Image (tube, rainbow, N blue to C red; front, side, top):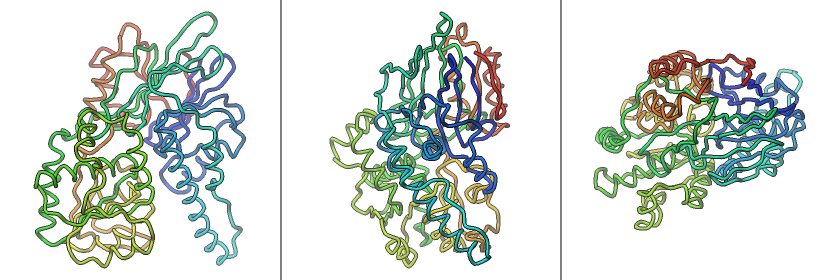
Length: 464
């Protein structure tokens, strides 16, 4: 068996790894690469392998940097199964269709410019119809149930505690009479976070592919997230400002809304209007309600007592573009939660353009911001940023709440890996992280006595 690393190698996005087993190929994740536009277009459009050579796909979770290029894989000839958990199937269906519509709209806008400048039009990476075709290949498998992937190869999903339905994967391979176990963490969540269960141990493995997003970085503890949030929101309200929140539609939006619900119940915040300006987030919230088997005990009890932790009395779900535009005319304190989480597209850009130059306002960052994104420039508190190509002077306060991160921090990652039997664990490969973060995580693992830690480059192949 060989492992070929073709995505999220020394970078955070575009998760994609190939297991070469007994002459067959199994793909772990098929995510969109997100970065500089030209590089992203090239890497997402052209696979470094023939999609028809893949026998099966195993999907860790629904986030677009893990699932978002599946429609293109299918468009280019893949027609096999895409294994995932039931909640991931439901989330991936809405997210991939939404991604297809975004691809179409982006190309429509680009082609208008190309036509005006006498250039040849281009096609979208994939369409909503392509996404629907991919969704028809999704095969749901519950947590902790062994299932066949290809001949002499089985897999099992274990709750990764990252988002609803997220899974780590343990693959068992019998090759030339020898059985080996490979683990893929997917994205590892944090303990004691709202709504979903804590990460669970997948069982011992011989080889581990581990995410490393926050290697060497320590988050604020989740126990304090509500109180710190209440303090920051109160300060903004006192000065008559708005709170603008770029948030991923799946996971972060629901965590934030649930935490706000708790704060209002305790009387820790004045009741201001809250707008969730994302049709995708609204649809995702309905799927959260459907999959209460993924909830932790505290949330399950909360649901029994309050019926609907996502339906605050002052919460307004905004679906249409016309409703979204009206939000910019509000002159009183309010909170607007909108996608995209890294401020690279979507309705959040309009709200930022409308609010960023007013010092009364707050831009609240609650998720990871990749390099070369507007979100990262906001985190770096640049004085002038471009939105829709227009420069804006940043006068709004920017606050970063990393306690809301759905990714384990550096210490939590080291603790996660320390659970594996070091006598059996022969090799660890670090993916899904910027190189400096991976080096820090590598050092942390070496301090545990784990020596065989590799940081693969894109295209590298390692024997198991």
